[in-house]
Length: 291
Image (tube, rainbow, N blue to C red):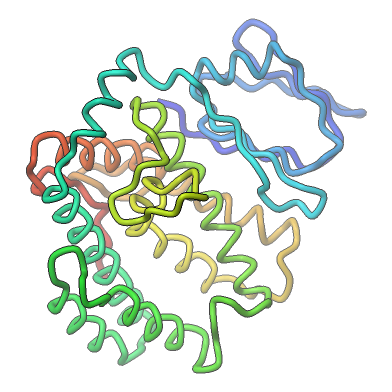
């Protein structure tokens, strides 16, 4: 299984040769085996790529993320052909009942709040007790918005009472960057398994291309949060971004197995789709986060 997240940060030419991505710079040339690549991030606008390379990366379901002149993710390349039975998967997705979608979303919200509580407890914040209560209070489809209430308590505990996710500050920039990388990784798995990212369980914004991926990523946001808290974010520079990206190469426990983060996402997404198709939330496999 692919596992490497590669970042091209400076002027380079990327081309394809015998199942390798060749990275040519002024002073060096490197070759990377395409089967090892999970995600390719083109951080510099001074990078040129050949159509042959893009074609091979797409066929191998490599997630390709392009950044703007400020080195922030701005777009991504998604294959038209995610799976050999995409049409059947589309019909299956459209037929998911409202009942099972509500049940799956409820489990996702509970898992997200549980992980937030664990992190607060790990960091010594007493607010984790309040999140434990919110976890117990989650109703079907989270009709009482325990997720929203938990988020306010959670972020205020981590970053102070004056913190808001709408503020323009380095911490928010880092969170947004990490979430964008996470969302792209989820998009890759959704498409590679033959499903549409547009049709979500809870998220239903007509302008959002990735409603389903936004649903699925929620329990993993804590992974980004924990990484950023461990960093002293004075400025979201290239070094900070690289440290955030490197977190995606960590290993985590899921389904009783320790595996690379991106491979764990594959296991998780498949389990969610199994739950939706088989009408059984017990099939969902969440990553194991414990103190």
